[in-house]
Length: 145
Ligand code: RB5
Image 1: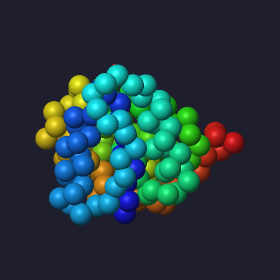
Image 2 (image 1 turned 135 degrees about the horizontal axis):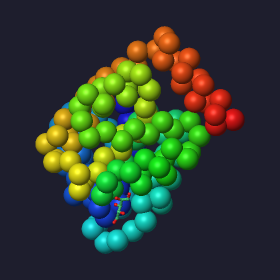
Image 3 (image 1 turned 135 degrees about the vertical axis):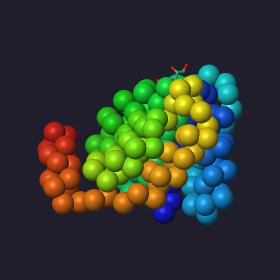
């Protein structure tokens, strides 16, 4: 699996920790920025990661801002992207099983880093359940048409 990573300034520090985790888990990734805590606009980074996932250049994307909300709103504008904002482990697992989410968004100002890393681990390792959930995802696709 290869992961596309992105953040704004509000998520920059947590993104570095996620990079360390991915290194430890031996999961490949590319960082689409930002590369400092200087103020930037989160939609620019959401777009880069979401489009890369939509084009299937990456299987998954992880986007981090202050709340995770802006990244989630922006990434979900890209057709084919199912971005899930998760601040608990249950949701991270359920959104993979039920929504086949392909982008995870996190808020560095909302969740502690240890919990955030646990969420990332669970989200990356949980498979989609398929079945009736695929039918529902197909209906989301129809909303995009
Ligand atoms: C930046 O200050 C902040 O608005 C951004 O990181 C994010 O929380 C937006 O949803």
